[in-house]
Image (cartoon, rainbow over all chains, first blue to last red; front, side, top):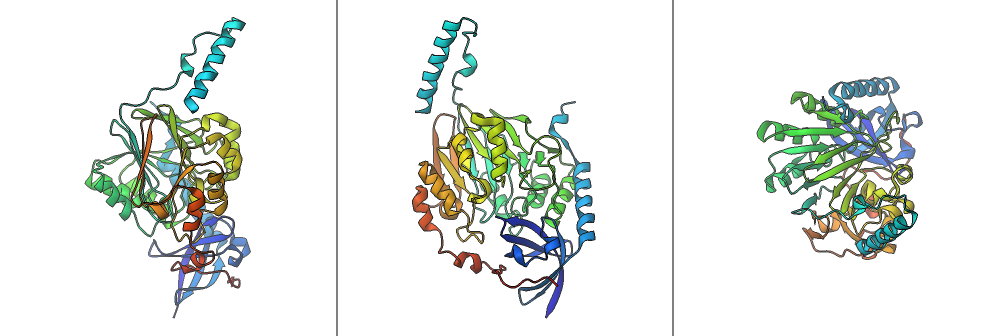
Length: 92
Length: 332
């Protein structure tokens, strides 16, 4: 049985391994480490978001979602910027 | 050894100053720092292929640098902190947003804010990640109104009887790469230091060497990026010149960490080396003068012998559940 997930390329390790986090219900539910060469080229970067098809604990396919990637990056960075301030801003 | 070399150098400086007559004779700032009244404890918690380090300084202030992998969801870290009777995390550092470093942040913040005495202040590299793990960390920061600060090179703060110097990320715009912006910090403990660089890689190390040189000298060094050969470069090790190195990675690391090159470089330099994959939890205690190490499991600290503790090539890369080996492209 095939299931579909959102997947985020959390990190590229040693330039060789792509560590993908699979999400369901706003949580990370599984992780796949695959050769970076197997990741579709335009999405071969940290933070890229994909639709992933999975069957029997195997990753069948990844399709890159550039718009979702850009939207999430902007949203996450904006949120961090809002919730934080530089340490050097002190000490007033 | 190092101290006597320093004293010789100081004597030379004083003699030189006397001759020239223009350099102030007062060389007190160059005198060795006295040891602390009690030891700083640096607990490298065994969290598998991830990082989590608890530091307790003599006045009782605490720091947690990273919180393990998302799969553990903070459980191992919280259990360890409970066993150490930690009621409050004064300083919670996220070196960078990867899920093997901030995997327990949400749970740790919730736990200490809801059931203990809270989080004093949290520190971030300033570069967000797109993962749900990272978003949930920010959720917890917002939920509990945690004082979250971004840090950069040149920042410094007091940590009880010690001082923390931030060396990375660089000040100013430094792009959005997470390893490039990984927090690197040094804790000054009397005459020695503890240096940790998160997952900073070779060119960050190069920048640190150019900017800080001998100031990076540290008796205790947590090997960058889980002992990967992307880090612990030769020029960096030349200036850091550690006596003790600690590697945080799983024995059956799906990435082959620590890499042979790193262990070989440590062996060439005679660095006493500890690896969570072999030694389990590793506690370094130092008052700035004497350093001792205790470990959960016995094991060699000779990096050349640690090479033999690595599983055979290839098996580790395939054996981890949920991990796939190389194959055909899977693009649609």
